[in-house]
Length: 365
Image 1: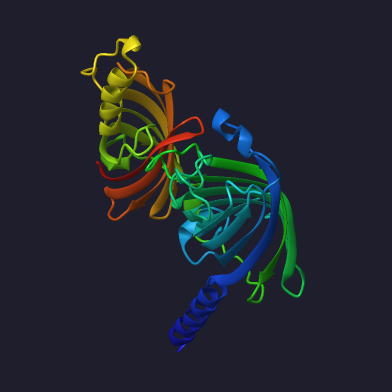
Image 2: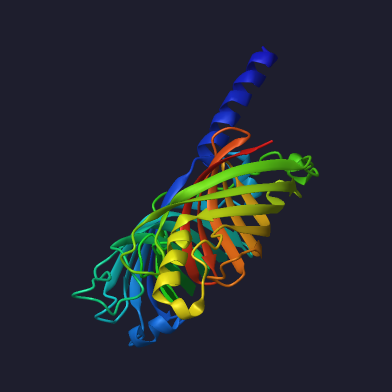
């Protein structure tokens, strides 16, 4: 009888914990006002006002239903919508949708939002009607956002407030020229609302969380591909093939450090070399100059369940045709379909100037 009562009590306790730890729903609305970051001379004539906008985020708030949620201090995840008016008739207005994560610090009063999605502009470049817009060469592009907020939830019946700083980036990854892209930064002020009653976060496997995590060095092979266009407007999209080989070492449950090399076979550069050799004969550029590049890089990978955030910084050790600065960087997302097979989506840039949006697949063994 005691055993039956114990099993029954265990069942109800497990059910109660599961109910307490279910994800809940929330919404945030932030008003934005800022400045355009003039990272290219092509943008100087486009900075005529202070961009304004609004960002609306719909979130699922985690409470420990899965072990990784406790490890990351119960983050939020969900979708967002952003509208930005650049206060310039040439740039027009941008709209974007995508996904986001909110990470919390300082007793959950400091929130870091990382968001990635796709965007649409109302005023893309057009050689006849909008030739001065050197920022957006296409109507559709990628969008990246960062927001750092002081946040106070549930002040009055589910309503809270937040304020802080934001950074937004719009670029098509040079899929179509011109594409200097637009970066804006500034301040934001907003409100938030929890649709569900306050749920207590639960701690899962705290002993395991404190246990040192070890993993042997892993080898990665990845292929990234896509299309981009040279700096010559109207030259057309050309395929690129970027091969990467690197090793990584997990230093804890969250992070891994990377060291590797890239081979870049970007055929739009091959076409651009031929164009330059004909258009600028005084440069004495050999049309058969090797367009390929080789780089070495260091990187970091942040593991969040099946998803990870990858950042890399590299230097070209082989670059016969010197088109961009010798330092490149990459910011991307990876999704692990299996333990050692993943796909990735990344933006490769030189400083604030994007070169390509890379879609790839890789193995980690």
